[in-house]
Image (cartoon, rainbow, N blue to C red; front, side, top):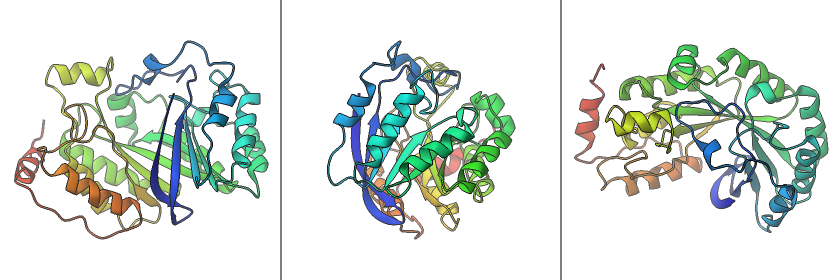
Amino acid sequence: MASWKNYELVSGKPGLAKSIVLPTCGCYYDSCYMCSYKRDCPPKTPQNIVSIFESELEDGIDKYKIFTSGSFFDSRELSREQQLEIISIASDSGAGELTVESRPELIDEAFIKSCRDLLEGNMSLEVAIGLESANNDILKYHINKGFTFEKYVEKADFLRKNDVLVKAYLLLKPPLLTEYESILDVVESAHKVEETADTISINPVSVHRNSLVEQLWMRKRYRPPYLWSLVECLNQTRDLGPYVMSHPVAVGKERGIHNCGSCEHELMERIEEYNMGSRGLIDSECECKGEWEEELKRIF
Protein backbone atom coordinates (compact mmCIF):
# COMPACT_ATOMS: atom_id res chain seq x y z
CA MET A 1 0.00 0.00 0.00
CA ALA A 2 1.46 3.35 -1.02
CA SER A 3 0.23 6.90 -1.47
CA TRP A 4 1.76 10.25 -2.36
CA LYS A 5 0.76 13.80 -3.24
CA ASN A 6 1.71 16.19 -5.99
CA TYR A 7 0.49 19.41 -7.51
CA GLU A 8 -1.00 19.38 -11.00
CA LEU A 9 -3.79 21.02 -12.96
CA VAL A 10 -7.25 19.97 -11.80
CA SER A 11 -10.09 21.27 -13.95
CA GLY A 12 -7.60 23.68 -15.48
CA LYS A 13 -6.41 25.14 -12.17
CA PRO A 14 -3.48 24.24 -9.88
CA GLY A 15 -4.59 21.67 -7.33
CA LEU A 16 -3.34 19.04 -4.92
CA ALA A 17 -3.69 15.45 -6.14
CA LYS A 18 -3.31 12.36 -3.98
CA SER A 19 -2.40 9.04 -5.59
CA ILE A 20 -3.47 5.87 -3.79
CA VAL A 21 -2.21 2.42 -4.78
CA LEU A 22 -4.75 -0.17 -3.67
CA PRO A 23 -3.36 -3.69 -3.01
CA THR A 24 -5.56 -5.63 -5.44
CA CYS A 25 -4.53 -8.88 -7.10
CA GLY A 26 -3.31 -6.85 -10.08
CA CYS A 27 -3.51 -6.91 -13.87
CA TYR A 28 -5.09 -10.00 -15.41
CA TYR A 29 -3.20 -9.45 -18.70
CA ASP A 30 0.30 -9.20 -17.18
CA SER A 31 2.10 -9.53 -20.53
CA CYS A 32 3.43 -6.06 -21.40
CA TYR A 33 7.18 -6.21 -21.96
CA MET A 34 8.06 -3.31 -19.65
CA CYS A 35 5.79 -4.13 -16.71
CA SER A 36 6.04 -6.41 -13.69
CA TYR A 37 3.57 -4.75 -11.30
CA LYS A 38 1.65 -8.03 -11.01
CA ARG A 39 4.65 -9.61 -9.23
CA ASP A 40 4.23 -7.17 -6.34
CA CYS A 41 0.50 -7.80 -5.89
CA PRO A 42 -1.14 -10.11 -3.33
CA PRO A 43 -2.70 -13.30 -4.74
CA LYS A 44 -6.13 -12.07 -3.68
CA THR A 45 -7.60 -8.63 -3.15
CA PRO A 46 -8.03 -8.01 0.63
CA GLN A 47 -11.64 -8.12 1.76
CA ASN A 48 -11.19 -4.79 3.55
CA ILE A 49 -10.04 -2.99 0.39
CA VAL A 50 -12.82 -0.39 0.66
CA SER A 51 -11.84 0.58 4.20
CA ILE A 52 -8.19 0.74 3.08
CA PHE A 53 -9.20 3.33 0.50
CA GLU A 54 -11.36 5.22 2.98
CA SER A 55 -8.47 5.45 5.46
CA GLU A 56 -6.44 7.40 2.89
CA LEU A 57 -8.96 10.23 2.50
CA GLU A 58 -8.05 13.59 4.00
CA ASP A 59 -9.01 17.25 3.88
CA GLY A 60 -7.59 19.62 1.30
CA ILE A 61 -7.32 17.19 -1.61
CA ASP A 62 -8.59 18.39 -4.97
CA LYS A 63 -8.18 15.13 -6.87
CA TYR A 64 -7.85 11.46 -5.96
CA LYS A 65 -6.05 9.07 -8.31
CA ILE A 66 -6.59 5.36 -7.73
CA PHE A 67 -4.05 2.83 -8.97
CA THR A 68 -4.51 -0.94 -8.65
CA SER A 69 -1.51 -2.24 -10.63
CA GLY A 70 -4.18 -3.26 -13.10
CA SER A 71 -7.66 -2.05 -14.04
CA PHE A 72 -10.15 -0.53 -11.60
CA PHE A 73 -13.06 -1.89 -13.65
CA ASP A 74 -11.79 -5.49 -13.67
CA SER A 75 -14.17 -7.49 -11.46
CA ARG A 76 -11.35 -9.98 -10.84
CA GLU A 77 -9.53 -7.23 -8.94
CA LEU A 78 -12.47 -5.42 -7.38
CA SER A 79 -16.04 -6.66 -7.32
CA ARG A 80 -18.70 -4.40 -8.80
CA GLU A 81 -19.93 -3.74 -5.26
CA GLN A 82 -16.44 -2.67 -4.14
CA GLN A 83 -16.03 -0.46 -7.18
CA LEU A 84 -19.32 1.32 -6.48
CA GLU A 85 -18.55 1.64 -2.76
CA ILE A 86 -15.20 3.27 -3.49
CA ILE A 87 -16.74 5.66 -6.00
CA SER A 88 -19.54 6.56 -3.56
CA ILE A 89 -17.03 7.26 -0.78
CA ALA A 90 -14.90 9.35 -3.13
CA SER A 91 -17.98 11.30 -4.18
CA ASP A 92 -18.46 12.47 -0.60
CA SER A 93 -14.77 13.26 -0.01
CA GLY A 94 -14.90 16.92 -1.01
CA ALA A 95 -12.46 16.45 -3.90
CA GLY A 96 -13.49 17.64 -7.34
CA GLU A 97 -12.09 14.87 -9.50
CA LEU A 98 -11.49 11.11 -9.36
CA THR A 99 -9.11 9.24 -11.66
CA VAL A 100 -9.16 5.48 -12.14
CA GLU A 101 -7.22 3.32 -14.61
CA SER A 102 -8.48 0.65 -16.97
CA ARG A 103 -7.62 -1.32 -20.05
CA PRO A 104 -10.17 -0.48 -22.75
CA GLU A 105 -11.65 -3.98 -23.05
CA LEU A 106 -12.74 -3.78 -19.39
CA ILE A 107 -14.73 -0.57 -19.81
CA ASP A 108 -18.35 -1.69 -19.64
CA GLU A 109 -20.50 1.08 -21.04
CA ALA A 110 -23.58 0.50 -18.87
CA PHE A 111 -21.50 0.31 -15.69
CA ILE A 112 -19.57 3.46 -16.59
CA LYS A 113 -22.87 5.33 -16.83
CA SER A 114 -23.78 4.06 -13.34
CA CYS A 115 -20.45 5.31 -11.96
CA ARG A 116 -20.84 8.69 -13.63
CA ASP A 117 -24.38 9.08 -12.28
CA LEU A 118 -23.16 8.22 -8.79
CA LEU A 119 -20.62 11.05 -8.95
CA GLU A 120 -22.81 13.60 -10.71
CA GLY A 121 -22.91 16.94 -8.95
CA ASN A 122 -20.00 16.15 -6.62
CA MET A 123 -16.97 15.31 -8.72
CA SER A 124 -15.91 14.48 -12.28
CA LEU A 125 -14.65 11.07 -13.33
CA GLU A 126 -11.46 10.58 -15.34
CA VAL A 127 -10.52 7.21 -16.83
CA ALA A 128 -6.82 6.76 -17.61
CA ILE A 129 -6.01 4.26 -20.37
CA GLY A 130 -2.51 2.92 -20.92
CA LEU A 131 -2.57 3.30 -24.67
CA GLU A 132 1.26 3.65 -24.84
CA SER A 133 1.32 4.21 -28.63
CA ALA A 134 -1.07 4.97 -31.49
CA ASN A 135 1.04 2.74 -33.76
CA ASN A 136 -0.39 -0.79 -33.89
CA ASP A 137 2.95 -2.34 -34.89
CA ILE A 138 4.62 -0.82 -31.82
CA LEU A 139 1.72 -1.92 -29.63
CA LYS A 140 2.06 -5.50 -30.90
CA TYR A 141 5.78 -6.03 -31.42
CA HIS A 142 7.47 -3.60 -29.01
CA ILE A 143 5.02 -3.61 -26.08
CA ASN A 144 2.77 -6.67 -26.48
CA LYS A 145 -0.12 -4.54 -25.30
CA GLY A 146 -2.92 -6.89 -26.26
CA PHE A 147 -5.25 -4.33 -27.86
CA THR A 148 -5.22 -1.99 -30.83
CA PHE A 149 -5.33 1.77 -31.23
CA GLU A 150 -8.82 1.38 -32.71
CA LYS A 151 -10.04 -0.30 -29.50
CA TYR A 152 -8.74 2.66 -27.50
CA VAL A 153 -10.51 5.12 -29.83
CA GLU A 154 -13.80 3.22 -29.52
CA LYS A 155 -13.81 3.38 -25.72
CA ALA A 156 -12.37 6.89 -25.48
CA ASP A 157 -15.09 8.23 -27.79
CA PHE A 158 -17.76 6.56 -25.65
CA LEU A 159 -16.31 7.99 -22.43
CA ARG A 160 -16.10 11.56 -23.71
CA LYS A 161 -19.62 11.42 -25.16
CA ASN A 162 -20.83 10.47 -21.69
CA ASP A 163 -19.07 13.31 -19.83
CA VAL A 164 -16.19 11.17 -18.59
CA LEU A 165 -12.69 12.61 -18.95
CA VAL A 166 -10.04 10.56 -20.75
CA LYS A 167 -6.34 10.46 -19.92
CA ALA A 168 -4.10 8.69 -22.43
CA TYR A 169 -0.77 7.33 -21.24
CA LEU A 170 1.96 7.36 -23.89
CA LEU A 171 5.13 5.32 -23.35
CA LEU A 172 8.50 6.90 -24.04
CA LYS A 173 11.02 4.39 -25.40
CA PRO A 174 9.53 0.90 -25.55
CA PRO A 175 12.14 -1.83 -26.07
CA LEU A 176 13.81 -2.20 -29.48
CA LEU A 177 13.13 1.39 -30.51
CA THR A 178 15.98 3.87 -30.89
CA GLU A 179 15.97 7.13 -28.95
CA TYR A 180 14.93 9.03 -32.08
CA GLU A 181 12.19 6.54 -32.98
CA SER A 182 10.78 6.70 -29.46
CA ILE A 183 10.51 10.51 -29.56
CA LEU A 184 8.91 10.36 -32.99
CA ASP A 185 6.35 7.79 -31.82
CA VAL A 186 5.32 9.79 -28.74
CA VAL A 187 4.89 12.99 -30.75
CA GLU A 188 2.96 11.28 -33.54
CA SER A 189 0.80 9.39 -31.03
CA ALA A 190 0.03 12.59 -29.11
CA HIS A 191 -1.23 14.23 -32.28
CA LYS A 192 -3.34 11.15 -33.12
CA VAL A 193 -5.09 11.17 -29.71
CA GLU A 194 -5.63 14.92 -29.61
CA GLU A 195 -9.33 14.54 -30.42
CA THR A 196 -9.95 11.62 -28.04
CA ALA A 197 -8.06 12.63 -24.88
CA ASP A 198 -8.49 15.43 -22.37
CA THR A 199 -5.08 14.75 -20.85
CA ILE A 200 -1.95 13.15 -22.30
CA SER A 201 0.55 11.75 -19.81
CA ILE A 202 3.99 10.90 -21.22
CA ASN A 203 5.47 8.04 -19.22
CA PRO A 204 9.16 7.25 -19.75
CA VAL A 205 10.06 3.58 -19.33
CA SER A 206 11.80 2.58 -16.13
CA VAL A 207 13.38 -0.86 -15.76
CA HIS A 208 11.10 -3.07 -13.67
CA ARG A 209 12.51 -6.15 -12.03
CA ASN A 210 11.53 -9.47 -13.64
CA SER A 211 10.43 -7.84 -16.90
CA LEU A 212 11.60 -8.44 -20.45
CA VAL A 213 12.99 -4.90 -20.48
CA GLU A 214 15.15 -5.80 -17.48
CA GLN A 215 16.57 -8.77 -19.37
CA LEU A 216 17.53 -6.50 -22.27
CA TRP A 217 18.93 -3.89 -19.89
CA MET A 218 21.09 -6.44 -18.06
CA ARG A 219 22.52 -7.52 -21.41
CA LYS A 220 23.21 -3.86 -22.26
CA ARG A 221 20.68 -4.01 -25.09
CA TYR A 222 18.45 -1.36 -23.57
CA ARG A 223 18.98 2.04 -21.97
CA PRO A 224 16.11 4.03 -20.39
CA PRO A 225 15.44 7.28 -22.25
CA TYR A 226 17.45 10.43 -21.80
CA LEU A 227 15.65 13.18 -19.92
CA TRP A 228 16.43 15.30 -22.98
CA SER A 229 14.06 13.06 -24.95
CA LEU A 230 11.18 13.79 -22.59
CA VAL A 231 11.94 17.51 -22.87
CA GLU A 232 11.85 17.19 -26.66
CA CYS A 233 8.49 15.40 -26.54
CA LEU A 234 7.00 18.10 -24.31
CA ASN A 235 8.38 20.87 -26.51
CA GLN A 236 6.87 19.30 -29.61
CA THR A 237 3.43 18.79 -28.05
CA ARG A 238 3.03 22.05 -26.14
CA ASP A 239 0.52 23.48 -28.63
CA LEU A 240 -1.88 20.53 -28.53
CA GLY A 241 -5.39 20.98 -27.18
CA PRO A 242 -5.25 18.37 -24.39
CA TYR A 243 -3.39 18.98 -21.13
CA VAL A 244 0.04 17.41 -21.71
CA MET A 245 2.06 16.45 -18.65
CA SER A 246 4.62 14.00 -17.29
CA HIS A 247 5.51 12.70 -13.84
CA PRO A 248 8.49 10.41 -14.56
CA VAL A 249 9.68 7.96 -11.92
CA ALA A 250 13.24 6.96 -10.95
CA VAL A 251 14.62 10.17 -12.47
CA GLY A 252 18.41 10.24 -12.47
CA LYS A 253 18.72 6.57 -11.54
CA GLU A 254 20.33 3.90 -13.70
CA ARG A 255 17.00 2.09 -14.08
CA GLY A 256 15.06 5.27 -14.83
CA ILE A 257 15.11 8.20 -17.21
CA HIS A 258 18.43 10.01 -16.81
CA ASN A 259 21.09 12.22 -18.34
CA CYS A 260 24.55 12.73 -16.89
CA GLY A 261 23.61 13.23 -13.24
CA SER A 262 24.18 16.98 -13.05
CA CYS A 263 21.31 18.47 -15.07
CA GLU A 264 18.30 16.36 -14.06
CA HIS A 265 17.28 18.56 -11.12
CA GLU A 266 17.10 21.73 -13.20
CA LEU A 267 15.26 20.00 -16.03
CA MET A 268 12.73 18.46 -13.65
CA GLU A 269 12.00 21.91 -12.22
CA ARG A 270 11.24 23.09 -15.74
CA ILE A 271 9.07 20.01 -16.39
CA GLU A 272 7.10 20.65 -13.20
CA GLU A 273 6.46 24.21 -14.40
CA TYR A 274 5.23 22.71 -17.66
CA ASN A 275 2.94 20.37 -15.71
CA MET A 276 1.40 23.37 -13.96
CA GLY A 277 0.34 24.99 -17.21
CA SER A 278 3.43 26.72 -18.54
CA ARG A 279 3.69 26.11 -22.26
CA GLY A 280 6.94 27.93 -22.83
CA LEU A 281 9.77 26.16 -24.63
CA ILE A 282 11.95 24.17 -22.22
CA ASP A 283 15.39 25.37 -23.25
CA SER A 284 18.43 24.30 -21.27
CA GLU A 285 22.05 23.30 -21.86
CA CYS A 286 24.47 20.77 -20.43
CA GLU A 287 27.59 19.07 -21.73
CA CYS A 288 25.68 15.79 -21.97
CA LYS A 289 23.24 17.25 -24.49
CA GLY A 290 25.79 16.58 -27.22
CA GLU A 291 25.90 12.91 -26.20
CA TRP A 292 22.11 12.75 -26.53
CA GLU A 293 22.23 14.45 -29.93
CA GLU A 294 24.73 11.82 -31.11
CA GLU A 295 22.43 9.08 -29.79
CA LEU A 296 19.60 10.47 -31.93
CA LYS A 297 21.68 9.68 -35.04
CA ARG A 298 21.78 5.95 -34.25
CA ILE A 299 19.70 3.89 -36.65
CA PHE A 300 19.94 0.55 -34.83
